[in-house]
Image (cartoon, rainbow, N blue to C red):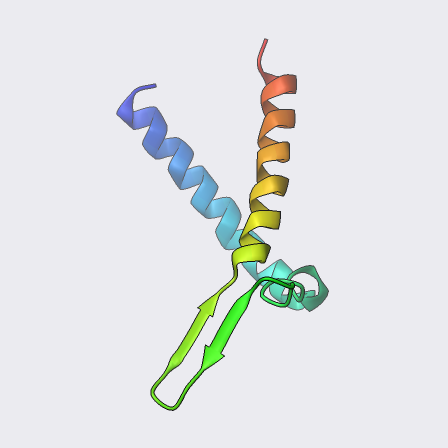
Length: 77
C-alpha cells in the first residue's frame, strides 16, 4: 500500500471516529462497563491517581480482533 493510500485510509478512520464519539457519549450504557470489570486496577493516593484497565482492554482487544477477522473474511476475495 502506498503512503498516500495509507494516509487517506487513516483520515477516513479519524473522520468515522470523530463522528462516532458524540453518538457514543449520548448513550453512556455503551461504555459504562469500561474500567469497571474485575481485573481493572484503580489506585487513588494522596499524591496522585493510577488507572490500568487491563480486563477492559483485553475484552476490547478480543472484540476488535473478531471484527477485523470478519471484515477480512468477507472483503478479501
